[in-house]
Image (tube, helix red, strand yellow):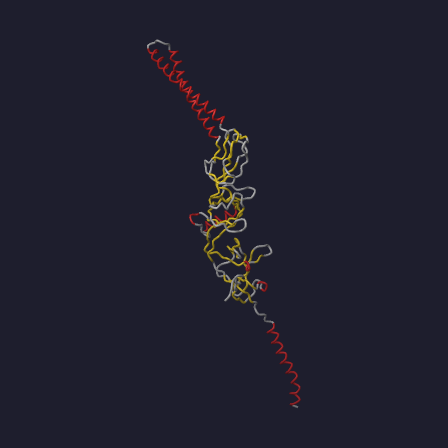
Length: 386
């Protein structure tokens, strides 16, 4: 009887044991492990802030050469594209008419000077005779007036001589500044007209040169706020240093300085003009040349540089980042100032010591518990290992 009872209980016990084992397996299968993410701890660093702008080169000095008197061009005394000195002869106009005018003015002056002694003596004698009532007062007045008129004629003749001498000098058209002269717009034998609209040639001083670049007023306002708040330290003596990239992207060997910003805003673009000065000893920079300037704004000692890999964007296009706080995922909205190399300069939304998720973003959502491992940045492509 006892054997029959035990025999009957065997299948029941087996079913119970199997149920307990199955329940334990199902319980273990329901425990999903926390996903693993690679994080990087954000640390502040010292960064030199720069801005790159398109720019154009312009001459330091430029003079348009025009005639100041009429005349026929007798010769051109320079080579196009050469360097000239201030005062150097460029063109010679026919001086003959002006030499004749000067000689005539000098003759008129000599005549006036020759008449003056006689008029002076007559005025003096009339004064003596008038004192003894030998002549009338009218005669004295006429003699004195004639003497003064003679003096005035001398002054007028001298002015005419000076004017004729100046006009004769204008027949020699000289360089007003030192620099490089351009092509000549006239040839020998052409007629020159005083102060004509078309210039004969142009001289440009090429060492140093100006480089002009537009910059938005919104950027300038933000820069001033950052300087006032102490987030950026200005450069030495408040004068920004500037570097130049040539049109083909190669760096220009000589550095420059920011001289001033224009005081007028262009209403069509909302920008002001920045003018920089660069030495140009080899005349590598030519007026009108396109270039890019890199302006050193200042330095910030606590910049948060975040790899672009760790920054995404929400549906509105705003930058966001994912960080780990107390083993849980938290989304942060960011304010990004600019890109510096392959990193973003973050001004708000992150703080020193934050654990930024760099890898594993597709596996997480806000509030999820995660396991963290250190993120290792890939070595540069040209790095070598021993």
